[in-house]
Amino acid sequence: MYDSKVSAYWNGRVDSEVNEESFRLHQVVTQKKIDELEHNAADLVLMGFVCEEGVRRNQGRLGAAQGPNALRKGLASLPKNDQHIQNIVDVGNIVCEGQKLEQAQQQLGDAVQQALKTNAKCIVLGGGHETLYGHYLGVRAAYGQDAKIGLVNIDAHFDLRSYDEQPSSGTMFKQILDEDANASYFVCGIQRYGNTRELFNRADKLGVTYLYEDEMTLADVSVEFDRFANECDIVLLTLCTDVIESAHAPGVSAPSPFGLHPKMVRSIIQLVTQHEKTTSFNICEVNPALDSEGITVKLGAYLTNEAMIGITRGK
Image (cartoon, rainbow, N blue to C red; front, top):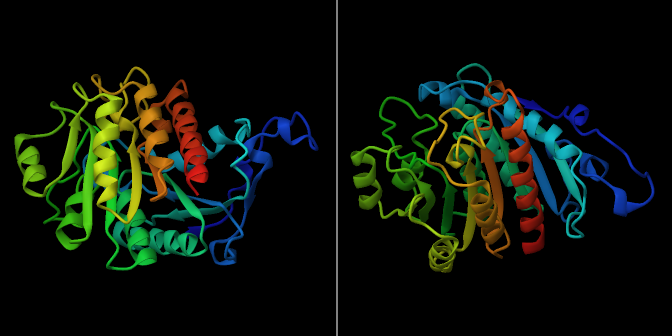
């Protein structure tokens, strides 16, 4: 289901209605329906994926479906301090009805394709990490079957589980790599205690590039990303917020006591989104239902803002 009514979340403090140096994001984001987008009319298109069916299937803690609108509220009052952030359009939410995950992912893919086809960059606010599969479908449709797509994931988990019974928030990358010979996968922040030996073996068999959270430095990420991006035509970036140390991000389905520091995640987002091949970004697993102090939502909004700045600079 498609819901374009998100204007209620784009409001907040107004320091000036005429001086752009005092503007906040809610003053520069406009709302349109997805089929109202025009070519070159937006630099950046935002959309939400209101879904946690994949998390439910993966036996995770529910609440991530509240993430997109909570992130909008967190973004709304942030200052517009970067000159590259200009024409931003929010086209609303794709909503998963009941347990129709696969249908919702296809609808998200259609929306992402429409956004990218207008020559805009795209940011998707999840939702469970099943958001990634719908996001990928849209990128693949927009750039054709021959384009080499690089999937960059900031995550504690591989999400390479079997989908023999049904897809979930833990299966997306295996789904993609099994069906798409022109897709490759690089993941930063892998937890030794968050993945079974079978998953490590599967990652090796599938040719996944991965960096451990307890070993990697930003220099490591930079070297590996440059090598990875050189072999791709298009780069898609996804952030699963459970990669962040749980003291800083408790409001996620699967908290990580040994997670990454937010400043490392921020630096990776800056690095990847400013690359000329990066066309889109999604943030997933922000769970307001488990975020009693609101710090995960706030951090998620800050990191999304970093992606907005980086990806528009790259454009």
